Each structure stands twice: as structure tokens, then as C-alpha cells.
Length: 226
Image 1 (spheres, rainbow, N blue to C red):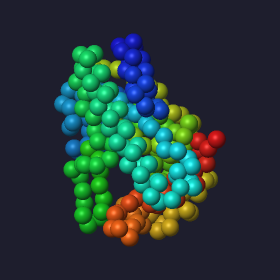
Image 2 (spheres, rainbow, N blue to C red):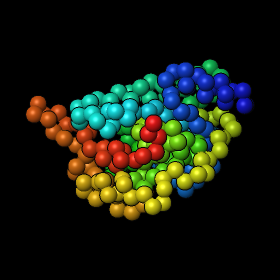
Image 3 (cartoon, rainbow, N blue to C red):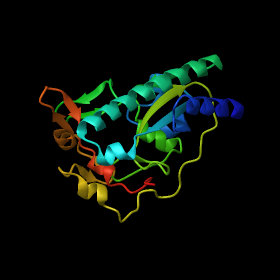
């Protein structure tokens, strides 16, 4: 299966992914009920995770409109990549279900304004060796820091998993993301109060559009800056 794995990863990269990793479904044993790969595909064996970078300049310097447009664009591109990879896997004789890169998803708590995707892309990416979670719960990659978005595919192909990232990408003494949060939504390491975060994350424009604007904890992370 190594040749198949290499072909699949090369295909995903050729279609626009910046990083691709492979995780065994055994890595998801501790996921909440309803959010495991087998809940999406009963005979799931492997999760494929693709990452696409968001330009540093847009995150750090860009106005809210540029940032929102870029995030929307990257999510769309990831879903297109996942569709193409799913078709590629089908041609190789497998079954593959792409998980939406952002919305929609089923799990929503209206009181806490807390949502969970059908599969946690960031935990999948960590399990697939693309990086490690930082204090603000976002995935940090060696190459691009936390300025990436993610998409996952669940497949019945038994592919060799990639090794985990062992080094601590988020320095233990660094508190930049926690200190930068305007509403102190990062309540504990890798824990974010979504109600607080969402209360500040979105901006209503004069025309009435609601856009994603806050990205302070992404701005200040020094990992992946060139």
C-alpha cells in the first residue's frame, strides 16, 4: 500500500494541498460519540488530512474584509481538493468520504455557542503528523505555524500512517496567543470558550454582511514566520 499512499499524497499536493498526512482510525478512539471516523464510514481504516496555508500577509496586515474572503476561499479550495482526492481514491478501488472543511455540521449547543465538526480536523491533522495543537487549540505546523486551514477524508483503504510530530512546536513558556485574545477566550491550555470567542470574532459591515474578523491569536504566533 506504500505506492498507493505515495500516489495519493502526490495527487493531493498536485491539486493544491500544501501538506498531506495519514492517520489510522485507532488514533480516534478517544473522540466523542458521533465524531469518530467509523461514524462517517463504518469500515473506515484511515483518515487523510490536507492542509492549505493562509498567506501571512493577509492574517497579519490585511483588513477584516480581506481576511474573511481569504478564509472563505481557502475553505472552498480545501473542499474541492477533498472531492478530487475522494474520486482518486475511488479510482484506486477504495471508498472515501470528505468531511466538510468548515460548515455544515450536526453538533451545536445554542446555549454555549459551541459546535463540533463531524470530525475534528485539527485533531486528525495532529494524528496524521502535520503538526501539534497550540495553547489556543489551533494546529501548529512546522512550515506555516497556525496559519493553515484543514480538511479530512475518511477512507476504507488501509494506508501506512505518518509519524507523529514529536517536538514541542508551541514553546511551553510562550503565552502570546493567550495574552493577545481581546476577550480572554483561551481559558486553559488548548481550551477555548466558544461563546466568548464568537462574541468578538465576527464583525457586521454597514451593508449588513457578517464577516469573520478577529485572528489575534493567529497573528502573534511566531512559528512558521519566514
